[in-house]
Length: 195
Image 1 (cartoon, rainbow, N blue to C red):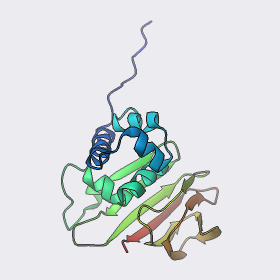
Image 2 (cartoon, rainbow, N blue to C red):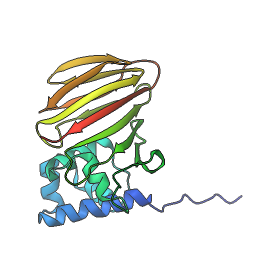
Image 3 (cartoon, rainbow, N blue to C red):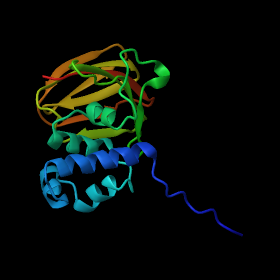
Image 4 (cartoon, rainbow, N blue to C red):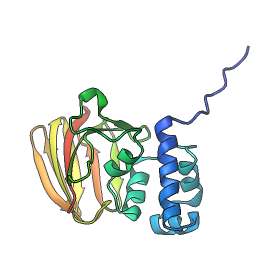
């Protein structure tokens, strides 16, 4: 009996993302070792992400965004095949999934030149827990509005529990954590405004 070989073709978005990450590193003249020191991520993981051998996690992308001075949405919009139009139809909103953590991110209103804000829909599966060691841009303004389920969001060492309809607004200066706080998935809107 023949076994089907695993498809080793990288996901097209991961391939474009890896290429963009390599470009950003090259623009700064950093070696993989220098980038590893700045991010706290191993050289092998960085290399595999740049070659699209792995799909980067939300935490990894956050660390890379922080050293490159951009939000995750900005980075992801840079790998889209076309610049997003002013009107973004639901079917055209880029979706990215961190399969390892159970996090799905829909860029409802992607970054656009001349605009400082963006809207993101986040979905976390039960048990999902994502920690970011730093904001992608210090002082980033965030408004988190829970649509369904329960979310525990930690910022400045304080955990805030948000239920459906609740909104938390803050500026992010340090580590944050997003955790599905209930037995059902949580769906929320994240409004991000650059300082």
